[in-house]
Image (cartoon, rainbow, N blue to C red; front, side, top):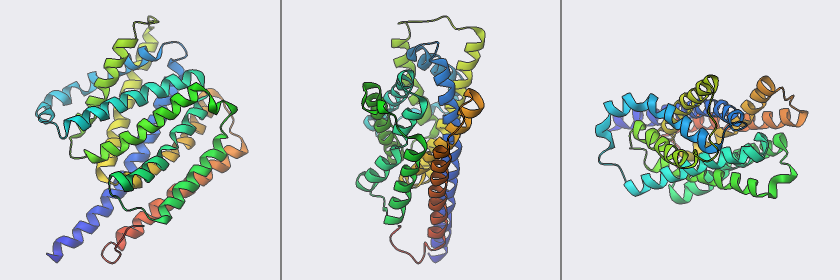
Length: 304
């Protein structure tokens, strides 16, 4: 029996590190997709973006859906799966709708509050053990976000409330994804895109603009990016506790600065650079802490 315990501790550590890496990759791709979506909603409606983006994503997923069709029946905890799809659809729609009225940086500020919500609720809802060290790192990372983004005076407007609703939906989405982690990846990803497809199909006729060939290519790219990012994030949440991997969403600000400079010519201010450095330091600390906990798994009881 002892021989089984040692690999278990090692496997758990490896799974957590893999989960962190996948979350970082997923956040990078989501950030790219967010910038692309922000660009597209300057010309097309949010409903049209959701619809065409979901069409491209489902077209890419269709071969896998057909190959693994048996995984869709029966579904693990179907009502919770339905709630997850609803939250995912609300989150995506809220994000892009908020970007129509608010700067991308302000919207991201609200979404980077998600790790605080997840860390607070994962202990209550998922019974994950969260110590003061991780709490401190998460809070320091959030302070870095505030320093970097300096939320504007628009933070009390109704578009900001939409962004906050999206951020809260995203936090609960992360928690539910962790709860149904036994569900195959293809089911988790495809059902989310079915939700955005349905909402997009409902809204897109209002204010439809005939897309150019180049725009169709961008919509297809947005769909491909969203598929890849979603698969990474879902797998991350299946490999590691939500309170461990979700704080790495703070790296989104780093990519926001990079894409803002390269694509839109936005030159980051000193406060943004300082805040990004704090965010990276906080995330790196959590990473090192997870490595230490993995090595001490046989000796340490509660995870902190």
